[in-house]
Length: 126
Image (cartoon, rainbow, N blue to C red; front, side, top):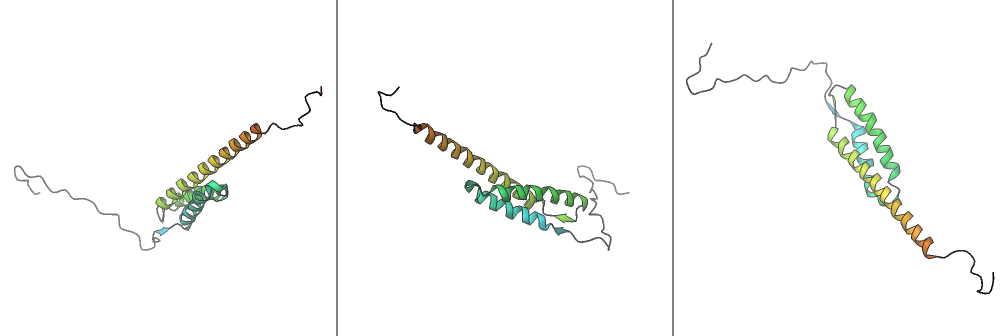
């Protein structure tokens, strides 16, 4: 057993990664993660035009499936970073859709409030 000199630390053996079995599959990036990112990007870009709600919803539903598959693959499916980015972009698209709809409702209400509406009768009509 080696003895440490005074004032010096003993070297510590750090275990390396566990050896892989030859039949283990190679880690592969999830194609659903790429699709979630692409749909999230489309949702963020078209969010103000209200068309972003469809790709954002599809991205979030697909992200749920991709997470489930990645968990079941025990680490052989990668792409969690792309998945997270796609989800963030999808939520950004949904926020933009919501902002656009709220702005449209406010403009509509102000337009209706400015127009008196109804029939304007003469002053001598009861």
